[in-house]
Length: 264
Image 1 (spheres, rainbow, N blue to C red):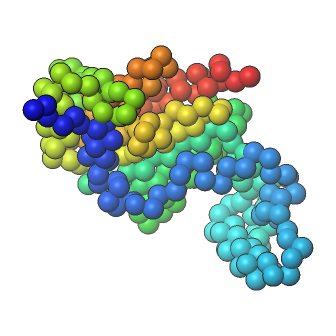
Image 2: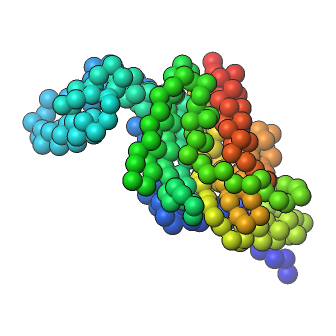
Image 3: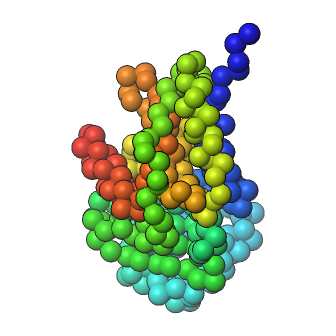
């Protein structure tokens, strides 16, 4: 009797387990995305309704908006300044968006790093224990902004990457049992950190958990990345490879470049 085949999603969830447990309600990478929002709507924080029944909800929304602005350098008394308008415009209209959500033993204990960009400027906002990190810079700095809060961990010590071929149903093809076992064994090693990356670039999907998952796994043998790859010709693969912060930065830059090349 043939053994039941392993699902790629099962391995991705095994890799991402600490993040899924600690941050089950993390926002999707396209949250807030509204490329057609007008300048006026940005200034008043969304369209104003003519329906009196919406008044209470609208007042509550604007009170919360004003409180958020007053805790930032982006405005005062609920009114955006020039810097604030640029930031909110990027958060709503930016077609390059990334979310790096992680948990780390050595700090930050939890991290929710969000980046928004439009091809000219980029904004990062990171929710970290006891503080919020913000950074507004030129577009080219986006990859570095995304990884800036990521702990440095040694490059994974495995001698090679582990590749699995996956069918259209998301199941690992037969004949790869030894590699599945090796992947499970590495993912079961003692962990010091885990991070899940979701990313969109100029309309192209770069990574999104779980079907296009990208997970960083920090073990006692160093850092690895588990990624689901779609080769575009019907071939799907799952790869677990030694990785580093610099490699993640370079991967993000490559995804951005590919997205720009495929723009109409």
